[in-house]
Length: 223
Image 1 (cartoon, one colour):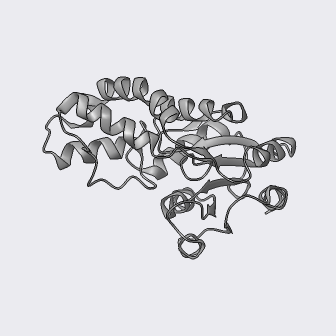
Image 2 (tube, rainbow, N blue to C red):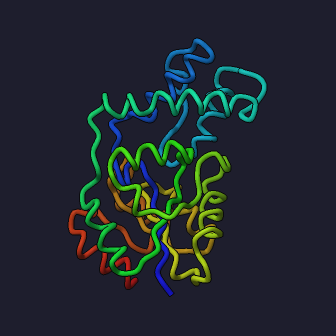
């Protein structure tokens, strides 16, 4: 049975230079006339649905996330390609080589990301790694990251045992969402959290980064 490896996007696969948060703030400003509307909202490890809901709550905007989701995402998706071009982003160390090695090792690669699905596609396509992924779980599905991981597992596991399924991310939220689903959490300290933070959250494997992609691929395929 192939190993199933589900990746987070921001600060795990790539660093967008803040393009996503900038585009979200611009979309929010277009709708509500509030600049920096998400200033009091935690982005790291959160789902885009959670971020939008919290932004609305912070500014006492009634109606709830569902009322504004379609209009917000339409605006966000139209702005995001421009902010990606304007910001100095990059793939994280070891990509795309790690993805190539995992694919060659017969791993089934997917996403377990807080990004809205179309935002995920735009980012991955911009950085040239979209072709490695078969789908997954996305940020419009829930405010709860564990629910997104559950969706990804349901779509991609195809009979894989829990110990053959990994969630790779840079935050304790990624790790806990894996553990909540009974699968393996893998941490990579390329975001705002240290290797020690990720170990404390329960990650079975922790990497400083994936610059030694050959060694990382071997560990991910055999752990």
